[in-house]
Length: 198
Image (cartoon, rainbow, N blue to C red; front, top):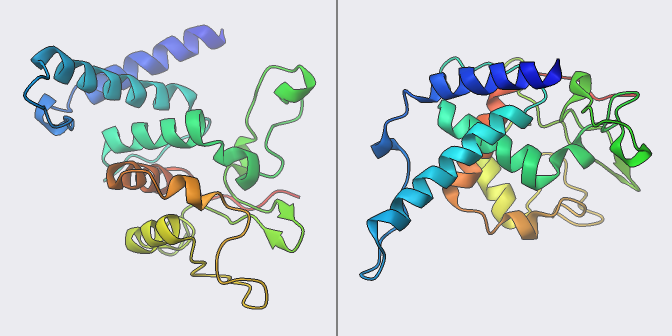
């Protein structure tokens, strides 16, 4: 049954993303030795990541006014490569869905990316859109990008410890492209608001 649902979702995503024109998909700059085939492979590989992002997304998305290609790419970065759920969802998996216990993986959709996991004196942030502003973690994109690039804690710094995020692996994420960061932000704008779990 789940496979049928995934096939239906993938089909809908393909139809939805068909509105994305080829010129809207970024191309890597071609060097003199690079072929047109290599350029097409880049387009196909990003399209594949966008589709995969929709397939692995665990929550209902609000796509109104959102860039659907960036949302899909952002989901791929958050859910397939970034491991954001591990720290920012408490608990990470739904009852009976913990793959570390040999159970079929099921992300805790009720508290998805709502934070609340403690690491000593630090607590993971709620990354979901704020109800009043729709901004993920209450940050504008410029603030989000600055935090990801520098680790500067713009909301709840611990000045006695450090003005920088101490648990968040921002030194890894600072190397992402601006497009990748924009995609993550766009995905976070599309997920539902949630509150931290118990």
